[in-house]
Amino acid sequence: PRHGDAPLVFVSFGSLGAMDVALIERMIAVFSRLPYRFLVNVGAWRDAYGQVPDNVYLDGWFPQPSVVAESSLFIHHGGNNSFCEALYFGVPSLVMPYCWDGHDNAARTEERAVGRRLPRYTWTDGELAAAVTELVEDAALHARLAAVGEKMRAAHGARRAAEAILALVG
Image (cartoon, rainbow, N blue to C red; front, side, top):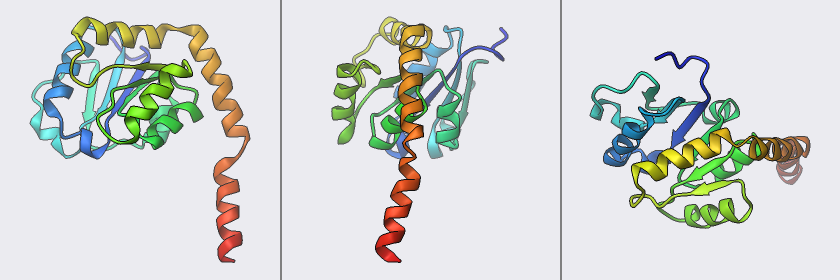
């Protein structure tokens, strides 16, 4: 099938999460049946994967902010950077936490209706497929998040933080 213009889903669980080859292989099996394109960060474990479906591309590294900005959905572990980048670029999150701040951010994702959370291991194929489809196809969610992202970008937080740091050391 042709997937060149299908919505893009980015998957990255950070350097620790990339070690979980069995989980990612299980996810890829579900992705193979969905009409979207998937970029999956597998860290240093790229060689652990055999053949992948046409709609899935695996690599050991992606320029995450640039990819998130072009995505229709970001599946991640809920780390603060990933969570904030999704909001900054107005992209829904599917959070599958495994440690630290991920559990809090998974809760915030659902409380603030900016995505969904799935348990790391106890999801069914149907639950993962439904969550991905729901989040990619929800036009109202995308519109609301686009406004959130626009507001965050207009605040120029990175520039303001850099100026504050320079003022302290200058």
